[in-house]
Image (cartoon, rainbow, N blue to C red):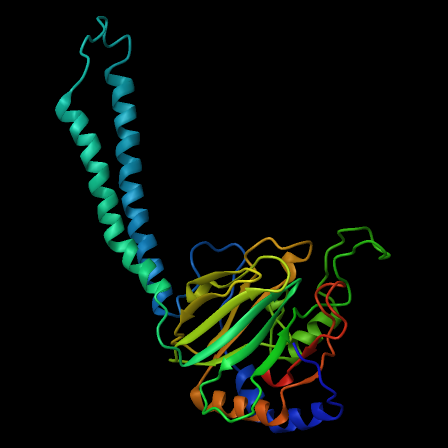
Length: 327
């Protein structure tokens, strides 16, 4: 990741992208976990809808099998107990029954495979991308590079690159050297609330919102290339139905096409160290005009401003930078 001298760029960038920021902040939060609720987040892609439908089908199959097996066990306990059968049965086998309990499970598995394999293949077969983004997992934040941003390439133009860190308050999880006992959790204080509100988030988005967001247009095929800079991480957005490990030295790929504008949250889904829980992902899906305005302004300004917010971990590099235009 390159670091450049950009004093004075923040004001220029903020002015150039003000309209795009206002529209992006007005988005509805669609993909977010809710305390006390069960089930999936609303599906925002075809992949997620396929996964939901497959899950519902499996629940029905599992439910029917569970009811059948439970009923069969109860029947056997009542019908063939010692009191009901004074004389023990002496049979050794039942060929038709043995064939049935072998063939029927095979048919059930084949039936499930006929629906699950196409879903798996659809996830793994990467289509031609409209936008390609490289996501690099670091301890404990994400770095993004718009390898292909959906606009006509310009000779000599650098790809848009920025870091994305969790918005936190004044109190982090305490570690060695801190005044608080080790493991003291973060608290939702006035500092955290002000940071959330300044970027258009609500209190419910705390520990999910980041200082910069991945911004993509609705209805476009987005390919995310994942890798890690230190240990294994995992990039996931539940509402999109995607998850891919970010392994150092390797490039993984996932794709999605979000069809509803809004804000979507995810988190690193691979245990990666002490601040693993504070490594969220924020994706904002906007209209094509808003995206075009944002990407043009960010590229024109260079996309680099100093990072004013506290990072999610004291171990994150002090020189981390962010791009204000992504919010």
